[in-house]
Amino acid sequence: MKKNKKLIISITAVVLLVGCYFLFSSKTPKSTLRLEMTKASRSSISNSVTATGTVEPVVKVDVGTQVSGIIDKIYVDYNSVVTKGQLIAEMDKVNLQAELASQEASLASNKTEYEYQQRNYARSKALYEKQLISDSEYETATYTYEKAKSAYEQSRSNMTKVRRNLEYAIITSPIDGVVINRAVEEGQTVAAGFSTPTLFTIANDLTQMRVIADVDEADIGQVEEGQNVKFTVDAYPNDVFEGTVTQVRLEATTTSNVVTYEVVISAYNPDLKLKPGLTANVTIYTLERNNVLTIPSKALRFIPDEEMLGSMNLTVENAMQEAPAGKKIVWQKAGNALQPKIVTLGTSNLNVIEVTDGLSDGEEIVLELTSAAPAVTNGSAERSPFMPGPPNNNRKKQ
Image 1 (cartoon, rainbow, N blue to C red):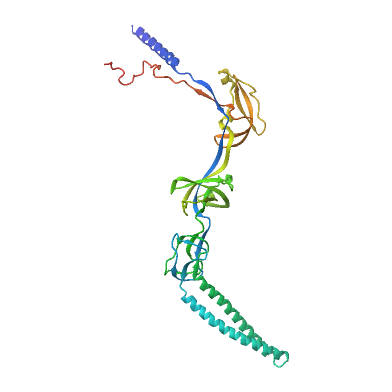
Image 2 (image 1 turned 135 degrees about the horizontal axis):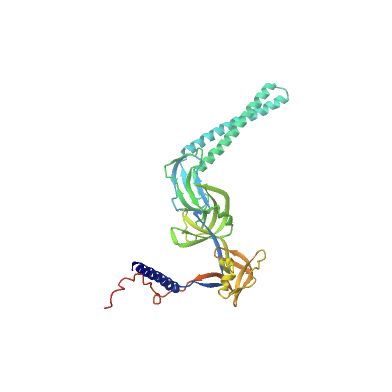
């Protein structure tokens, strides 16, 4: 009896397993193959390079002084509009004027000495030619004359220098523009010993700005003069500014083993929103093609599988055909057959590619072969008798 019970239980378990297998395998959705198509259409193709940069004035001049002294008066401040030649500051002139007076006296003295020695030399020369004085007396007269002449010329040079230094005490604007930096105050002492101290920074025209962008070495090969640029600044996040690449500088900058190159971008700033020093997030359009015939790049990677297409009652014509050099093959559906189409390609980005010959606007081509399973609705879905039901499934209806 025990053996019969074990045999019955074993047979029952096998029958249940077989029944479950056929139950679920017959209700599992079968995958289907589908040929996805696309049309050649006209669109725009663009590639871009991103970088960050700094907004700067096109012309910016640091105004300094070549003489040391005390800043006596300042006539401009931040954001002051100035014109070329306008007085913007003065230095204390007491010491310079005293030095000028000293040099004037020295010049007058040397001039008198020079004129006296010049007349004395002329007399000595005349007497020497008549052999009325010795060689030694003539040489002494000549020496004294040459020495007085050198002293006089040196005094004249010193006078020119002192006068120029006095002129440098009056500081004027070298260009028309706006003062964007003032580095001194009245009464401050500046020293012009080894370098010229900067007193003011003047920007020429703030309606004409530029962006100095740092472009990575991997992207710099795509950047050329004349390319269009769009950029944003954090101060105006909703505004998009436009510019043009005007210069690609050859000198590389290495920071933390990252090599970048400076690209100069001109930017028109009529509303004066762009301010010197703002950080710009730059997009340089290295490729722009508008209204060109394009297809998805994925269509070029489609290779027909005759066995899989045969299960869809489709055939492949000229399956072994190869494209000539410089051309590619796309596939078109004609009735129940796929036919190759040779096309000539142009520029491309990651998603689409330009077709210059071989297709016309609106022509359909094969994009890819996909596998899809039909969805099972909740009403028609069957549940395994061994799976637990949803919550409250066993409750009786009230």
